[in-house]
Picture (cartoon, rainbow, N blue to C red):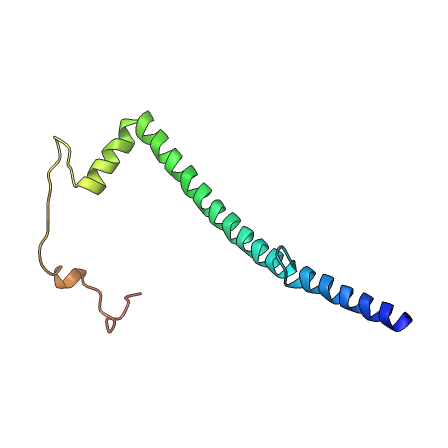
Length: 106
């Protein structure tokens, strides 16, 4: 009778251990979910910082014409009414080119 009870308890223990480690909502699944949560939190932090930068940029664009003018200059290539646009084509003159063999005057 004791051997039968012992065998029953061992089988019961094995079943509960199986469910604890490998069953649905077991420890392995818990670790996977913890890893996913950590990855998602890291991505959320990155996206939150990006959103803060974009909010600051939107605030600048709404608040001052200087920011709008800067965007127009660099992104769209626009120039002001009183300005002259100069575009140099070709290689720069020899005196402005840096050479690896050229010695630095001291």
